[in-house]
Image (cartoon, rainbow, N blue to C red; front, top):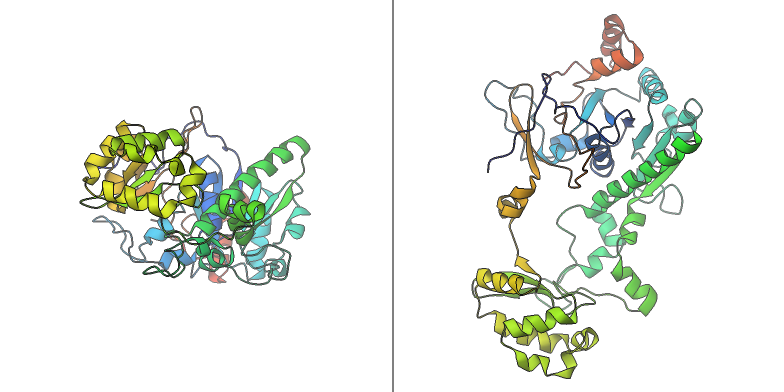
Length: 431
């Protein structure tokens, strides 16, 4: 596929323009996904993101390959970043610094004085030993918005535990409603195919940070934000959680079926599968007419959704028999034209070639200074006046260490070399 070019300046950055969060600075002490996802969003909208990494290891996801970025001829071939790392680290500057060394922690504290936001995902209390916890930093910067992301939050019996997406998907109940029904082939609980607990938490963290900034702008007062993966995943159980809280029903795995709406699932066709999502009685009537099953409309059991839900198995078996006579393309065209929501089940490669996805321009291409193309999936919301900008490719480990410390802390070249010799900051790693 051909990717649209993103206009860039001489440094390889996306051309400048109005941005919603321009002028804000984020000190990002997080790793892996939930925190970096939040900081990438803030960076897309214009904030200056300073990503602090260990000088030797860096963010864990740098090594989570293959696949890894394939360098263009003439570009650097050492330590190519993984696709995972590239997915959540654009629009950032990497600062390689060892916060376990007193001098390193001191540098980060100095940086925090000039920052608006701190993001971190250390275990509860993990940063207090370095003087980088909220209470320590707020004494020097009372307007600081400090967001902590952990598995279980800052309080409660599980607070000291580490939390990972897979673990949270299980503990939150998400896996109990994901997968084939009990007794069906392959009926074990399943995790979602992308780490949704991390991603949802990153989104909620971003929302909370923006709300805290609004408060700070009115009052001058910063605050501490406590984001937990478990809390977030339970919040986004949405209708499944409310089915229990309101109706006392324990939701179960339904495969591709919907717990509340029928028919709303995938159906086999003559050459594959499609999704049919009937959301109201009018759409159900249109479906029956398109399938030439007027007899179903005459059956009072199926006249409304409660009846269709009560007689789910019989109705869906009947519909499946009718749909199996169609090819996927013909059935999707007929249903979509008749006002019944329907669509294919695409592979990932098919997604990026879909004409709607291409028309929306979701995929962009940046380039490293050495000329290696870096594809990215852009920020999905379209802001008419202050759109997202893709200014920086995901940085190499410590790539902007000297730049950040000299610009923000006025460190001289001699001071930088002394810190480098002492192992406090990383070796200059410019592309």
